[in-house]
Length: 131
Length: 130
Image (tube, rainbow over all chains, first blue to last red; front, top):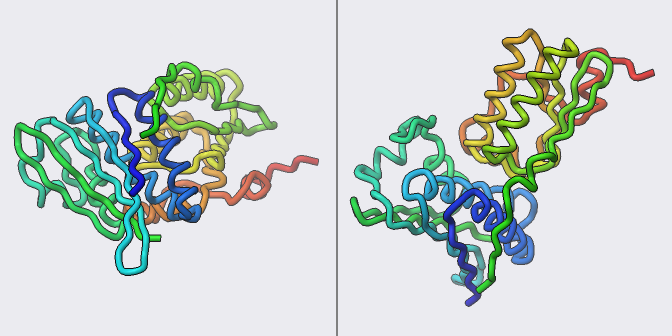
């Protein structure tokens, strides 16, 4: 199982991670639209890491299940966590001064999406897009 | 595990190219809209619009392979700013992947003129290149 891991701690590491994930997505076999969707989710989650947790990491892993394959993206940080995940997944909800479309939008861009968070200890977001 | 080296953000900063085409200012965006890039872009566009009194800002985004919601907001900020100066902004060349992502973000309707390519934009503003 091939895994790629990227530390996210500033704008440069963020952009370089996206550049590399684009290569991974294309090599994996995603078409242009799938690659753009997967990269957009990676971008939203990396931006959230920088905004709320300052640093964290993205992990991209190839997955296989019942004859199909996909790419899984995990975003992990040790930041303040999310107090109410249900609220965070609603359109137009934000605690960071944005318009609050990042997480719900990301949810709609992939086939599987889940969040686990421990307030005060960090957040882990999992997104998966099948080929 | 890949090893990712850091790259100074300044290296990205100069890649939004501005070209004057009669009454239009064409901005060609070929890089990710990082905070530094967008701030420089805002400043450059406003200076050029004020200095040369353009009627249209043609924002060519065909070089963008993705546009997340934050970048979309930044683009809208620039469009809003030039609108307040009496300039008509036109978005050009959104890629299919970018469009698909914007729609999933519930941004299917954009309140600015959209053009498929530069020729289409010229036609929409009746800018005759001959």
